[in-house]
Amino acid sequence: MQPPSGDTFDDVSGITNEEPVIKIGEDRDGPVLELDATEWSVDALAMALRTNLEQWPQGVSIWIDHPSGETDDLLTRLGFEIQRDLFRMERSLPMEQRTDIETRSFVVDQDEEEWCQVNNRAFAWHREQSGWTPELVRERQAESWFDPDGFLIHHREGRIAAFCWTKIHESETPPIGEVYVIAVDPDFHGLGLGRALTLAGYQHLGDSGITRAMLYVDADNTPAVTLYRDIGLEVEVVRRLHQK
Ligand SMILES: CC(C)(COP(=O)(O)OP(=O)(O)OC[C@H]1O[C@@H](n2cnc3c(N)ncnc32)[C@H](O)[C@@H]1OP(=O)(O)O)[C@@H](O)C(=O)NCCC(=O)NCCS
Image (cartoon, rainbow, N blue to C red; front, side, top):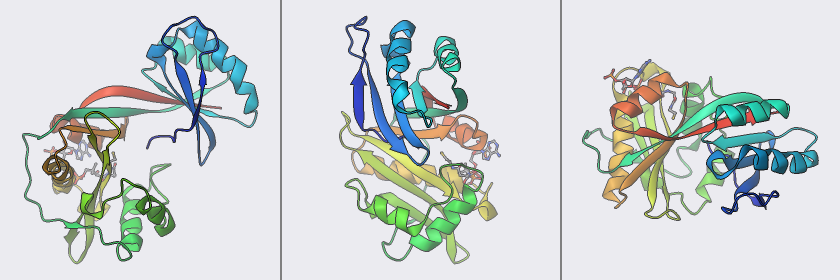
């Protein structure tokens, strides 16, 4: 759920010494900027954005970490609308709650099609997470972090009923373990599978030596946020998407 990162442009005002940056990437909607509001004075941010936004007359998305009323007002003045908030939730591992639910590893060249069907049913309401194709899964499989043993599949009634796809961010210190995608087929909601698969994912990460857990979740995804809070994850960062 994170926008991709690419180039950066530095604070053009020179007002702060922290050398704040705005990362530039791209997603399916076009150019994406990312910045941390705590690194910027509002005046410096206004100048940096006004100077640089002209290069994307077609429209642009801006993710702001730690947004405030001031950044909301600035982006509104620049013609943006707030689209949604994401929470980055974190906690330490291991967790107090445990599970012994049975899972198996994702099988490359076997599970792609069925996994996409389950994922797309579970996320039918979600703008980015729905619409996965086997080709997109294969693109992820080609990435250095992909590990089929960290992609847990649970079966019920002879089909994939739930899954938890984990990812280890080796570049962070210490490395941090993410529940990257987790879902339960809507036929099996409310049976405890979401809790069990989330715990299974973090147990797998803990068993791999990971001591810090994180994930991203839409702030208005009440079932998921309630579950995550219940297993001890806390909101560390609010990321707000502005678009025009
Ligand atoms: C979120 C999701 C994984 C929960 O799975 P589930 O199997 O239905 O949930 P569980 O039965 O394990 O419930 C575990 C806890 O989640 C919370 N929860 C589940 N459904 C809820 C709902 N409709 N409203 C509020 N809280 C809810 C509760 O805290 C619940 O604990 P409790 O049963 O002790 O009250 C499932 O709704 C899903 O697949 N949603 C679509 C995909 C998605 O949003 N994934 C998360 C993206 S970050």
